[in-house]
Amino acid sequence: MLKKLVEKASMKKPGGNSDGLKSSDVEPREVFHYGIPSGSNMFAYDPIQKILAVATKDGRIKLYGKDNTQALLESNEAVSSKFLQFLHNEGILLNVTSTNHIEASLGHRQEPFV
Image (cartoon, rainbow, N blue to C red; front, side, top):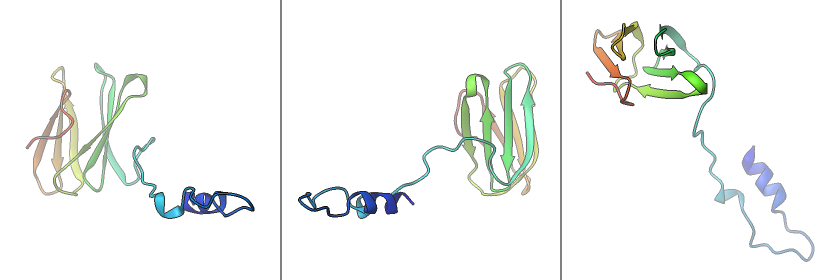
């Protein structure tokens, strides 16, 4: 849709310059996603840090915190979670995948470790 808008806006007009922006110059892509991801199948909540973790079927875990902060954790494997829980007062999110791999994510790191 964005490409069509650029094409329409850059159409040659009488007396205009044809060196403007072309649709081939525009490659839109998603940089950030707001909201709950599609394919969500499990969630966990940490009442102390006030963080909600939402796991998806393709191995992603989206974290929602205070002041509309969000973070995305991506697993090495695109498999769903079968257990997701914050460890009380530890700042660690424990994730057990459907292939029985255990991943723990620390609150100050953006990637899970196995």
